[in-house]
Length: 353
Image 1 (cartoon, rainbow, N blue to C red):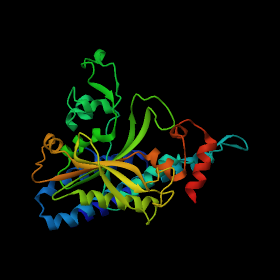
Image 2: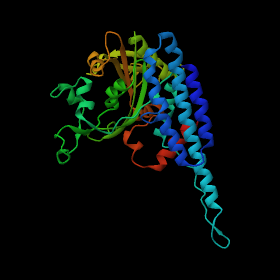
Image 3: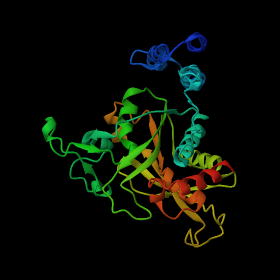
Image 4: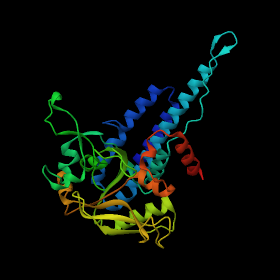
């Protein structure tokens, strides 16, 4: 299996290098990551491996998968740049050329932070996954142990879509309230062990203020394997905080209720402003809540066809905007999406430091 993965890397790297246009790259991408692609079908054979082999194969597979995806994007950018260069030499009339020189693009600070967060977890074998923004009540609630009439639904102010004209029962189609709508899809699609992350936009019917928005981003991990425990959850939390905010950071777990995990935990971080000494921002406790997490509820695992007596899982999530608010002392969540370029450029300067 190890030789096969390495061979895929060699063969497709050569194909990527030889691609002459974007159409060639699209075909290569489908051959690798499409429904019947090499990197899509290969994990289905992992269940045949013994545990010792899997410890070697799983990280190698994730490494090669991320590597080939990055190589395709780099080649895509190169082909586009070459095309612009050729066009810029064509003349409209005598002595007049098209100027295709573009100002240097700048990423939104939130995008920068989210990519950095994804890179932190890619180092330990997590792959990225996408889920729909418009989804069904089943994936957003029912599959996550939140059936109809469950009081926990009051925790999410849901935006429902008028779906009757599409032949869908009213109240069954909605804008996802959290990235957790990816959980069942991930658990059904991949065989354990599973290390997947999802970053994306969520929506809730909120009264807007300095700490609440109707549109916001979430980052979530789904980690399933044998013998996982709260100790692994503690490690993941502290690993992230140290990578994102510095090696002096510490994490602690507090009991907290979420219907799709049991037990659930609020993740507190050592206050980044007073380093645990106590200040106004942390209420003189020395700690600030930064994430929500827990052990995936056995019912959620069962809904995906995974035996909760054999496997356990971790769900772990943060709000990237709130993390940036703390990191840079920002007092209004709405600033990230209101288009204030002065604010974004100032934040970008700090991001480079």
